[in-house]
Amino acid sequence: MDTGSHLLFGASLAGLAMLQPEVANSPLLAGAVLTATLVGSHAPDFDTVVRLKSYASYIRHHRGVTHSLPALLLWPLAIGGAAAGLFGVWEHVLTLSLWTMAAVIFHVFLDWLNVYGVQCFRPFSKQWHHLDILPLFDPFLFAVHSIGVIAWMTGAAEPGRLFLAVYLLTFAYIGVRAWHHAHTVRLVKKELEIEQGVCHIVPSLWWFHWQFVLETADTFYNGTIRFRDIRVKDVYTKDQTHPAIQATMGTDGVRAFLHFAQRVHVRLTEGQDGYVVHWRDLRFWHNHKLPFGVDVQLDSDLNVVSDRLGWTKKAWDPPYV
Image (cartoon, rainbow, N blue to C red; front, side):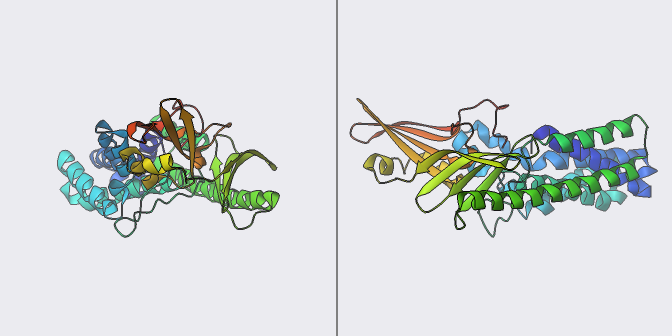
């Protein structure tokens, strides 16, 4: 999810920690827990520093090693120990490490629910896993946790029980969204009369509003879902046989893109000076546009002139991944 949401959930986890009497009765320990959960909630995204090298490096490494199974243990040990030393509460280092672990695991879990996905089973698998249940920013979860934090900070409610209710509501909400997602996938396949294709349902900021991509052996179908109204908007056929397309396979941008992308469509445009090959991930289709991919320019002899990998949309424009 987005950075603001992760930090908010770190704060609400610190409120949940008030269920422990030793935390609730010690302002010093409570401050250490808050520090640990805030840092732990953001720590897996420290890998964004690779963006300084190149966007291709970012695609390869973001939500990778720092979100892996070993990281679920290493982050809590490092952050919990640092918080214990900073606040001088070494006798509570286990408590700090466990709450940090909760923050890290919740971060990775939320990223798993997103369309972008996460390589959460490394080192055993480098496959991207995504459940396509929540958008990058979920207004409902943000509102619920914000209300909880405000109530805690203003003294309007006892934090332990308050955030127990908040987290029970959070997981119930995620469960409902998961059921609705699976139900909607079945509706799309039934509407298009395609049972064997791979279908991705991409959530929006609004409940009951989705968009989809359904892939068959030779075709992609993209469209929108508004409640039970399912409409196909674009149809793409598969074709990767042109020599110009094959000539782009060795570029760094295309390799990084194919490492991450799943519903891959490639299109060729020809000009007087050569070709431009457009690689796109159709999961991120929106309103007849394909905003994520890599464009490779070649001369008439199929030599690569340039390539550009990334998004062609504003951060606040859909899709929210």
